[in-house]
Image (cartoon, rainbow over the protein chains, first blue to last red):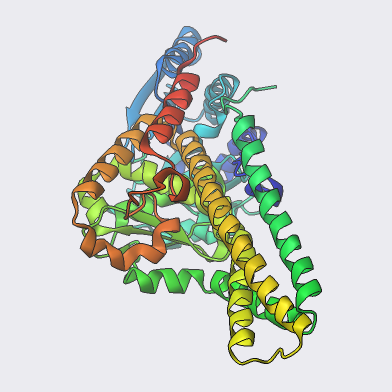
Length: 191
Length: 301
């Protein structure tokens, strides 16, 4: 936000930049071969549900839209402890990361078109392996950057794995450089 | 192009800009008056006055934290509070401020600091006990909006005319008492400076309070759009204002100097209340939130 907006007491938030989501499928391959983390076959969009009829209507429309598509069989909605809503899309074929990203893009676009773009927090694609390691690739819209989030226990993060993921993906994804912004998304679906 | 549900409030912006412009004009008038009446001391007084304003702004975080006996807390100590602020900052795309706690029963919250990078958001233990997580989030969003709007800087700059005028009144009194000005012109200069500075101080006092109320309304708007839940802020304000009224006035005097940074003022003046209060009335704030609520709920495509 510029100084002029600040002086006038206005908060202007820029709309999300969604195209970077399509970089995830190739990053998924790198994660699989480099670190051994497999895609979990889901993906979620985290946003702030607004009060009122407009938002409820929009949300049901998005769910209908995705459920009408035979390629995308499952959309679930859940709420976390902080009052944010997660819309989770899943594919039967868990290796179909590209399909998941297309669905995530559709959810985000619908939210944006209805004027709720400022309520978007992040998009998360979870990964995991047989040993119980879990890591989510989180996309921050406003900054247009990715960062890894690896929960370990209820309120602890596996920083070592996160750094590993960061180093593996740095050549192909825009990674968030400011570690302060690596927001912990506890209770995210799929992790 | 995707539209935004952000309702523009041109009236508020125009009123607020006008007040800021008037305060700027006042400052210029003061400088010109001083140059004319007390040419040999004008520069000196002006520099000290502005120096005080800059010092207040620069140390606003430390001073406010000390005045409220607040201390900084880590994410480990207050995970929910930090988590809520983390998410709000990620949505608003702003750096995360430091988080403070003040062990007071008054339900209140404030934000201060010289810039968004050096800001502190502080809540009292009273407010955490009284509000639901959703309401607390609304209050935090309001405070974060103060940070984003650089309200500490804006209010300090706006207050500088008043500070310099106050300094000048002191200087003129000093000159009059010690008979430094034996000549007739000198005496006229001193008395004139005293009168002008008092008038400017009085006008800037009212304008400053007006500006403070507008900034509060702006922060309410921005906060409500950030959480998308204007009703949560409305119920929080009702709870806080209601609680404040029942607390004995004597206990609250200690926090008076902090009023401009609070979410709801700790003291309500009985006379000239609407003109001199730092915060808009509860009715005004609720009315604005109701408008935002309606806009968010509008279903036309």
